[in-house]
Structure formats: C-alpha cells, structure tokens
Image (tube, rainbow, N blue to C red):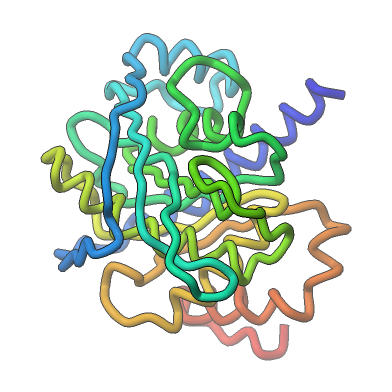
Length: 262
C-alpha cells in the first residue's frame, strides 16, 4: 500500500513538471520585490549533487533528468494572518538551487499532516519520503526555486490548524512569495520571474484558493504562469462547483482559448 501511494505521488509530481516546463517558455521580466513579510531565515540543510541525483534515481528512475546543481534548504519565518485576520508568524521551507533558478518559483502546498515534525520547514535534506522531499527533488533539481508553507497551526505556529479551509490556508502560500524572493536576493541567487502554484490533497485545494487570491492582487510578483493542483477524483468532485471556475479562468487567460462552453 505504501509503495502504491509512493508511485502515485511520483506520477503526480511528474505531471506537475510537465505543466511547468511548458509554461516556462514565457519571457522573463524583472520583478520589484517588497519583502515586508520576511522576518528571518536559517539554513537548515544542504543536498549535494550526488545526493540529489541518487535520490532522483531511487524515486523517479529515468523520468527525471539528473541535476548539476546542489540545493540549499532554508527555514523561513514570515508574517501572515490567521482566520480572524490577526497577525501571526508562520514558517516554511525555501529551496534554492546553487547557481540560480532560471525557471522561476514554485509554491508547493503539502497534503494533510498531523505532526509538525513532518512540516516542510523540518525537512533538512535527509531522505524521509515526505512531500517536501518529493517536491524538492522534482522541482528544485530542474532549475526552480521552491517555497512550501507549513500552514497555520503547523511548523513553528502553535495555533490550531484550520483543516480543511483552503481559503484560510492559502494566505500562508501567498505570503511566502515575497520572503522566498527576498531570501534568494539575500543569497545572491537569481530566480526567474515566473510563478507556479501546485499542491496535492489538502494542498490541492489550498493551491486553487491560492490562485484565486493571487488573481486579485496586483504586481508582477503575483502573476501566475501556471498551476497544477491535484487531489483524488472523489475529493475534487465534491468541490468542483467552487474550484473549477478558478482553474478555468487561469487557463483561459494563460492559453488564450475560450472555455466557457467546456
């Protein structure tokens, strides 16, 4: 059962990569970053080229190309808001490929966890089959910077986690964008201007709400190039009336097609 779940997760990550690689052909533009949400960062781990490639072969086989970049992992703390719009401090993980991330920034929203020890910010590069590890291998190894919020009530935040309220948890995803880019600038790591949003299970719903929130914000830093939210078909069907219009608006705008009759 565990192996089947792992295989399913790997297939999903490969599907996400296909969407992002296609969107990454857009032209880069310079971003003006306002790092008002950024509080602090701590380098929590480093993955060597050999380590990354060994794990890629183990988890993805030949489906993901080997990398020539080592990866630096940082736990970040940043400002956000809780369900009552009160200020809070949240934590998350930012992964920066050494030598730059020309393909842009991926915001990855994790699925349901019950233990803060499994939050993305706790991933230090050691193999643990977590979603943070899989997202790191799939995206950061391909020239993307990756930012993963822990959410309210997880990681460093000691409040209650508002499961499964994607409309609330999406704030942690939106608010990690500026800190991720501010950290990259501080580390002299060039990150492409494109922004991608993804997530699985609970994180799939969070990703959809994140796209909705970003569409309502102004500024190039919030301009979404592509999104790839995912969940089981059963869960997706429960919310199709609420979330499908978000995806349709996104891809209609990005691909220039008419999907009103789809």
